[in-house]
Amino acid sequence: MNTTASSTAEGGTAASLIPSLFPPRKPMTAEQIAAGVEAALTVQRRAVTFGKRPFAAVLVGPDNETVLLTHQSVDQVNHAESSLARLAYQHYSKDFLWTCTLFSTWEPCGMCTATIYWAHIGRIVFAGSNDQLYELTGPGNKENFTMEWHTRDFLKGCPQKDVEVIGPLETEGKVVMKESDNYWSTTRSVRK
Ligand SMILES: [Zn+2]
Image 1 (tube, rainbow, N blue to C red):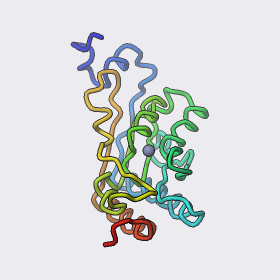
Image 2 (tube, helix red, strand yellow):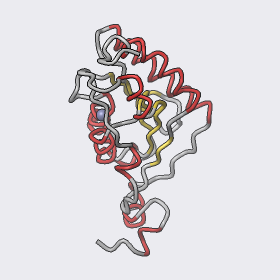
Image 3 (cartoon, protein in one colour):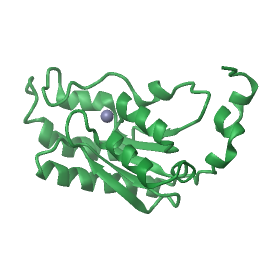
């Protein structure tokens, strides 16, 4: 693959070769970020009442405000973000999804980040980081053997397309941590 010249163009190689699939993304305001995380947190709160783990994601449209789809964590291999990305890809076109944002209460794992990439969703916003999640789950938590890898690790240096990543978020992350710990504190192997 030739990664010189065109790969340095804004948006990446694919964007320069097929611009119709990479319409401009509207920049996101701090208020829109806070609202999107709150929408995901609402889904997460409901998920926990149904005995699910505290993870949730929402897909927000090109206006950065309209919630199009939501998904909670189903189980350990059907995560909120990858499940939502697959659903999004069934519902909408690539060029549309490039202008959408997937909000997640927690940093998407490798499986989810890759699925978001393949679904062609143009932006990821997450509140809590994997490091913060590990603080809550602790080692040897049978409900979540938290990964050390980060969302940006999987997208770093990708010459084809520049999925935008926003997070972790300091203020929203604290709220997500506090609420999620109500669940994780009951499942930790090592008590704090
Ligand atoms: Zn995941």
